[in-house]
Length: 201
Image 1: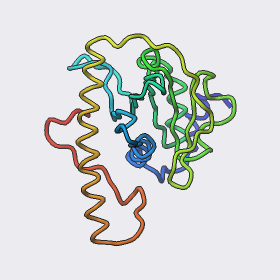
Image 2: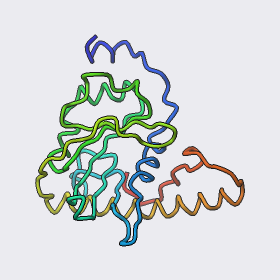
Image 3: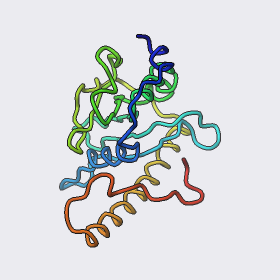
């Protein structure tokens, strides 16, 4: 069955994990702090350009700040349903807006049924949510990336700053919930705060 045929059939199960859940899982994965500080700078909803000229959005980016990690810039596309993934395959220009500027490119999904065998491009990686933690199913190969033009760098840095602010609010909410309801929290216990006026979407 072709991608178009499957999209037209519309046979898709409801998404039980949201994009916010997946972003939280990515933040957890890249929030590594050691003796010399955080290893990654993280950014959610990275626009392709600064200002109103932006055409596309990268769901999540993480920059390795350690030279031992070769200062790798990781790009991520989150897909929470099969139909969402099929639309991505049908419109390769969406990812192409970012892949040339990233050292690695990952597809991040909540379960194994979304991406089927033979569908993932050879130079993309795959992460799957298992037990609330993202597991690497296929490692993304590292490649040389084009230098970020100033407009793309500005968009990335803006997203880093906004994500850091959001993560701080999320941590405060998590601690508040821990005090109110002692016990383990799931990803759904930590919902994304409402965007304030002026926030970039």
